Length: 224
Image (cartoon, rainbow, N blue to C red; front, side, top):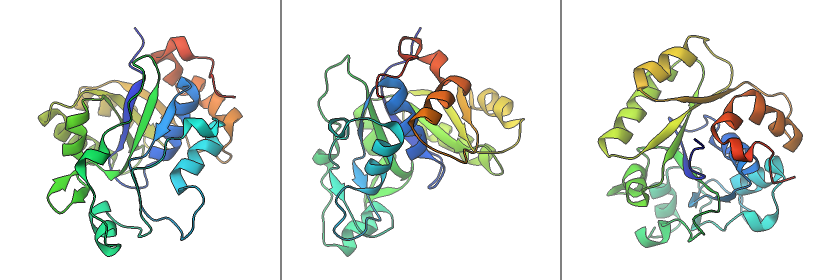
């Protein structure tokens, strides 16, 4: 049975490859993309960083990239970046855009699960209100076990559904076995280090990583 096509891409930490996996899902599912909070943007950026990268990598049309709720320049946690810029992040603006139930949507988070959105609100608490299932992205190498199991435990304690795990980059072969077993979740795929990135490469990775088998109805990417 195919997995849901409206989902959240979360990471065990910053820099684990959420944007790459988001682009892979956007292309594979023919999905729209939304990043609620983008931080670390250069001044006068015409198109926010991760949104632009997802559009380039996935080959999706510009209409598939939904505007951010907040675009911040400081490369920091959302609560701190917003404070430096005199912006108050409002909870109601962090609700996923209305979409038809049959349309695919990929929501990419900023940083890890416990990142503060405001001084009194964690990102994982906002996720709990969305009731969207999560694809958790983790590094395949050193530190993956601890970070991944802690993240899965935090999600389960808040009753946030987890679709499965995607490992990104080079790492230990044992992690592909031990993490699904100890984390009591499915391994959706392992994406190796990619020296080149473009839509055609993502098509091959979609199939070779095993991710296409979880969404068999979309094994031929609609974008492209």
